[in-house]
Image 1: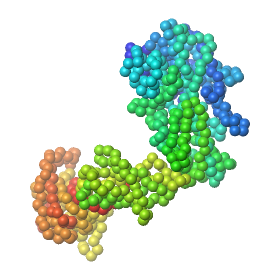
Image 2: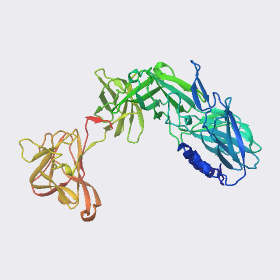
Image 3: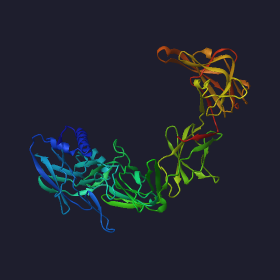
Image 4: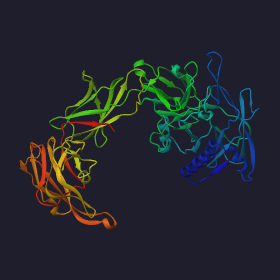
Length: 613
């Protein structure tokens, strides 16, 4: 037993959590015997308390199938132990019972033995839990108390005023260890009703337990092709209609669970991962998974995903997606009950994300059309749009009737970068990692940026020689407007990266840029701008000379050691006249012609392909 006493209830709670974590760590690591060598009470006076609990539908721990279709019997088992939480004199005492041995379970009644520190107080409150919990005691003075109101809202309580009492925060276990006919015994959660006594409990006391949350058995069917094979991984994924949380608070007075979605601890349990051990597909093509989850209802969809080991070098992922809406059914998991259902028609997961999307921005640049090829075994697509501030807008995908699907947003969008989220809806029976969306970027009214990097020039691994033209190359960048150049080489002036020419030079865009906006070039002084810039309607033509304007001057202190430098960093913008889609840079004199540490082109593009990421 450990006593925790502080001047404030919040510090007390923090310490209680720490002590509980230590005890749980010992239990989970199979080190209960370590407590045998420690005198927890350090010579304090103690007495023995025996807590009796009957087995039955509302208690634990073993699960045994009854003959025929009679269901299951749930009961206590050898090796089980309880935690007992005692509140008195602003202290929470935490006690762990001895493990049940042969003879401790008689006619369904289990007797747990505790060594309790002797105390004298005006009132004692008790809760017992299996396998463990984090206890706390909330204080409130009346029904108008802020703490009481918060409690009532959390538990959706509207009845008469309830006195302060103990609570227990419970952690629902995600990983399970199923066997052929049972599951991890620590996966069940039991909590007793609160007992309030004017004197400390002693002798024998009967506690009434309730099972919190639900035990769920999922029978996997239709796996005949994999008879005798191991299921190495499994997952159960539910739709948004189920709001389970991994950490929940149990009120033993109301006998009700509640979760705080604003709490820093606890994660939604829409996806439950299993790590089966020795789970083999039976001769009839079935296997059983067990789940321990908070009570709730799934009314939209669920999915089961399995990894089956074929041999040492091969595994196959099988999935089954069930659309409950189309079936007009729901899965209801009741508090304290065991639910069982089956899932069949597993197939390899062959529904994939949309590989690419083609975007066309409208002339007004306040909307777009997105088009993509239909994905095999998908019957539709769930879509929504977000902007750079992560504001969400619903979008509707429609079948174009030619093997493609699309989304149209014809106007009203502010100038911004948008992200179209697309998730295929699988045909009946086909698997899908349903929570994953493909994300595709489109800029509406905002120019795209094409970067020209210093290292791209003169690098044999990134440049292609032009056939029949000695010393001319193309930088095969993945953007419109590939660069053809001659007589320009990389040069390092101390740590400053530049391009340098030894005679006449040029570089120009070989493909049109849709509505060129501007080109911006960095330089460390004015000598780097000794060249001419032209805009034209065809490659390498000098139709309109464009003047540059310094739009930014900043002090640069960069590099390190012998490669450090200090200089004013100038950024010059060349804005192109409307209607010209090619640009050319050229010069006649030798020397440093420009810097290209991070020069770039702003441009609009009305029709581009964007990939998910």
